[in-house]
Image (cartoon, rainbow, N blue to C red; front, top):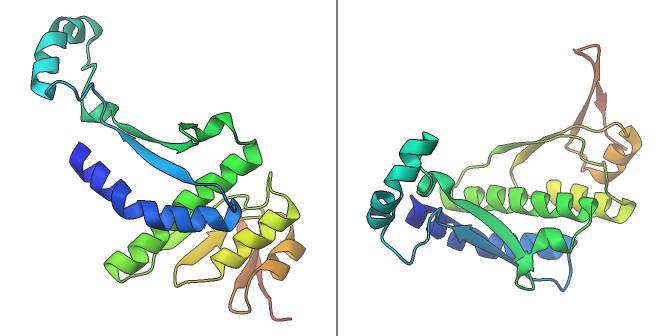
Amino acid sequence: MTLARSRYAERLEPYFQDTAQRFFQGLSFQLRVQAGWDSAEPLETLLEQELPQDLRHGHTQSGPHKGDFSIALNGRSAKAYLSRGQTKLLVYALLLAQSRLMEERAGASGCVLIDDVASELDQANKRTLLGFLSEGRTQYFITATDRAMIKAGLGEDAALFEIGQGQVARALSIRR
């Protein structure tokens, strides 16, 4: 499982770098995969050593289930450098990179849901993000409270739905 995660991160890395450059010109982020155990020792040896602790706690302390990934900038956690809005853009970059990887590797487009697309983003980053969403074959469903921002940022083939009291109140044309 850890090997599969590492291979996926390797395939994703160039897409992520390219996508992140759309939002963070000049910065280079790195995807890091953590195994979930000290990989200096074989997992079997570590599991044997930790068995008493595992029994005491009622669950396994080390293993693939503890694996994770992180994003680094200049060798440190990206969270140490970024504001909330920038962190949101970085998450979008990761999501969009995964979508692009799927499009190219699987030969199929996906469907991505993005909630409250505009919160915590300045106008320039909103435009950049919406411009990116209008590229490619992936279908995006986004929610927002600013109809004008959505109309200005999306292509002509986009559809706009107004939701009220849990119902689709009406579909609006975006045509300009």
